[in-house]
Picture: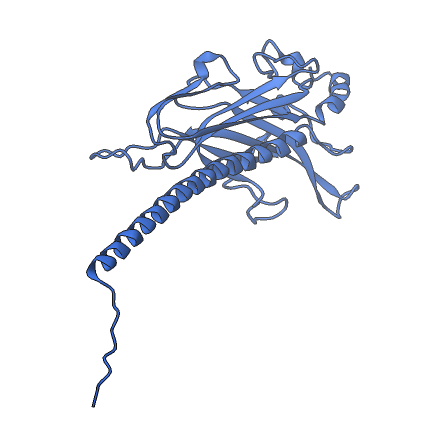
Length: 293
């Protein structure tokens, strides 16, 4: 009886090795593409985070500046030099602090026992910088080293007509009550990783008011004539952004001495915006009639 022999086809060792090599090449190409795309995504994401957090802070400051000088028509609180709508304090040392702005405006709460049925109030909001307390993990050693940046804080105080001073937010209470007034606070951090914060007072002619006006300095006549406030906020990335460490510079609204020049791998973005002081023009006629300036 004849048996039929069938030829059995298979894969040789050489063919297997060739298949493995091709697979490895394809996997390497895919991994390289993934790495490039992932790095690009991380950079775009980091840049977006910097821009978003900076815009959130600037937007908050702009809203408060627009409220500067606001008060109700029948407001009975006596005006003093502490009620200047906008007070800008310029930085004395760019390495230890930034500019500071104080914004004063009025408000009212319902009080049925009065006629009109309101209790008028005055608030002061402050924005200022302090050196960041975030530890720099890229610098090793026995001593704790903080990142080279600032944190921006916000403070809100309420006027005490009895003592003619700003109340301590930590002990401030609601009118006629022992309940803590949660609308005021001593110091709350708004954002970190800030490189600089600059404020410029601009008059109706678009000119810089220097020094920023106060109730007693040489530019006091412009206290209620500030048309806009220019804000410049520079913020850096949390993580190293560039591959190479080299000198990178950011121009400041101030003179060249305040330009930011750092040799590192961090990305820095600057947002510049002008905030309109919509209430100050209305106050000028009232203030001059009362003889406060």
